Length: 434
Image 1: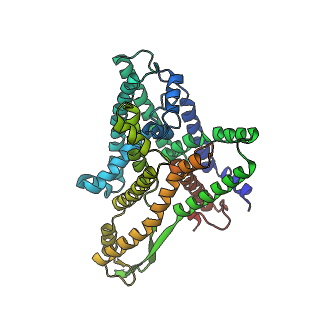
Image 2: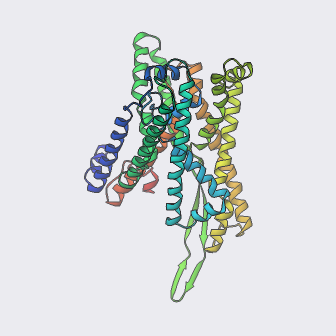
Image 3: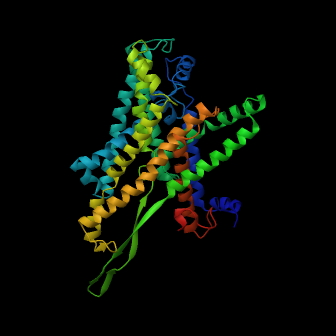
């Protein structure tokens, strides 16, 4: 069965068809809401300000909001407060016993953590929106038409409500649609920029600013990078595990052979987000305090393609990759759970030796993933500065797009295979078909 028939099969299954159409409708609502302006802001002046802020923290926020921050829409904060709250509570599970206990309580514990995350999202959105309103008032260029406390309160209420609505849209997709809703909302915001990049490239080709051979080489390199991201995202190190047989009454339990899948890129895009937040801070200070020589020097040094920027940025990504992997993957807990269920790794003693073995393998597996993340993160800045490519390719955006696309395809693949249809890949390369 070819891939066209596989796409047709998606709409032969009523439940899958309903989920896909529901997801498309929610994403359309999100994109339409992204054109409703926030009252009291001069959008043209704000867009001109953003054009001069490449490489700042606001540029990072604008990417996650799908360009809504630049356009000063009601979704200007996007889903970033929810992401920040989710990361905070995920880190709290590793250091606070109460949240660690909730995480181990199953479905009920996860519901409570989700509820806390929602409250945290509202709290962060209120702080960020009020700070954003106050910051806009301090900027020159007539960005705020009528400054004052009324503007601050109106902006705070509008942007917080927009963030809560976006969070609700994402949860609806996760519950009633296909794929992870929050990820898909970020995905659609990033992909919405691609047509503009394609048009800019076409204009450069037509005007002769870019040679056709250079465009073909860049295109081939882009395909190679995307293939590498897919390989790293899907890459796993499988540690074999055996479970001893137990006889309870007349029944025999256990005796199965399985494995622990340790992903090459366990941390995902989180290390790049953390590293970007830190590496962009000096540039942001230089923008806020242009008259102070120290901050101006920092803003020059910590901008691409300066060698200091490249080295520090890469080191931060590798550091955060190990840190976040250690937070979400606890070898001691894995070893204890295996020991409780009479499981063991062949040739390794249960308990402490097993935890040490898993930790050693995880440390080695994480290194290539962390280095690859660093290369992908610095790739767009190098392509723009050295190759004069007229679009931003790589970094956090590309990792999110590829990761979300793979995850959504896997979920669709699962629905197709479960109902005895062939999936997208006839040789079963997606994880759902293995």
